[in-house]
Each structure stands twice: as structure tokens, then as C-alpha cells.
Length: 233
Image (cartoon, rainbow, N blue to C red):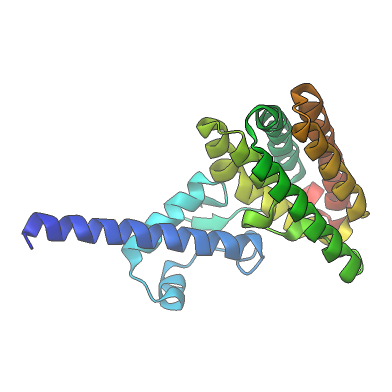
């Protein structure tokens, strides 16, 4: 193997490792394993994850881009602290963007995708029935109703904004206030109504219902943050 090929392979491995680290650290922040406001220690994290400083620094830069980490001169990198204004700003953007995603999904979603999404909501119903109404909204990845609709929009710019720039922050707010929210069955009913509109190719209605759903979620989060003291940060 030539020197150039070897160097290129090393760069690819480094990029892949930093992406993997960024995902692991993002999950750690969302789940609260890296506490809000805590200082990011490169030495400790490098030891914990068994990696060198280079890929770790790249991962931390990615987290800065996602808004999960802030960096201050002479202080270093810290995990963000949730606050009410940021939540309201984030959910205002989310309401507009996901409303548009629902409208587009009503035009582009295949019958097979619709069928699979109804099956997912049935799974969520069973989860509530079997777990004393535990918040099924904590589901993530392919089990996330909202992510399915976002991807179904087939709009690459919309998908990037919602899944790369906003999704981690949204998950963080949902995770840190989940115990304070009530009536997960209401959220499920709203999800079914949104999907019904998409299945019937009613784009205007799908957008309206999605925007109302997220606006309601924003108000519930606001109430939860005020109860937990996060609103005062």
C-alpha cells in the first residue's frame, strides 16, 4: 500500500471514530451521564473511551455544532445548561420545520411506510398498556414517530436541520422533563390524527395538526421546566 493510500485510510478511520465518539457523547449528554454545565475533561474522556485526544477533540467540535457543548476562552468546553428561552426558540423552529415535514410526507409517504408507521403506533399503545403509561416518547431512533415523518418528507435540507442540528437538543429537553409531563395517551392520540391526515394525503391538515402537537409539547415543557427550576437558568 502506498504512503498516500495509508494516510487516506488513517483519515477515514479517524473520521469514523470521531463520528462514533460524537454519537456516544451525545447520548451521554442527553441521558444525563454527562451533567449539564459540567466541564469536559479530554483526559478523562480519552481514558474512559480508550481513544486518543485527536478523534476526541473532533467529536467535541461536532457536539459544539449540535449545540450540546459550549467553549469559553480560558475555561474550556462545558456541557450546555438547559434554559427556557433556548427551549422556546428551539421549539418555535421545530414547529415550523416539522409542520412542513408532515405536509411533505402527505405527498411522498408510500403506503408501505404508512402501514409500518401505524404498526409503530400500535407498539407504542402496547407499551403504554403494559408499563403504567410510562412515556413512550422516550423512544429514539427508528422507534421515534417524528423521525419517521421527517425522513419521509424526502427533503434533504429539512432532514439535516431536524435530525442533525435540532434533534439532540430536543431529545435532551424531552429527557430532562419527562417525569413532569402528563397524559402520554394524549400525545399518542395526536400522533394517530397526524398519521391519518398523512395517509389521506391531506397536507394542510397534517401540517396544522403537527404544529398544534409541537406547540402543545412546548407549553408542557415550559410548565415542566418551571417546576424543576430550569426556567430560571
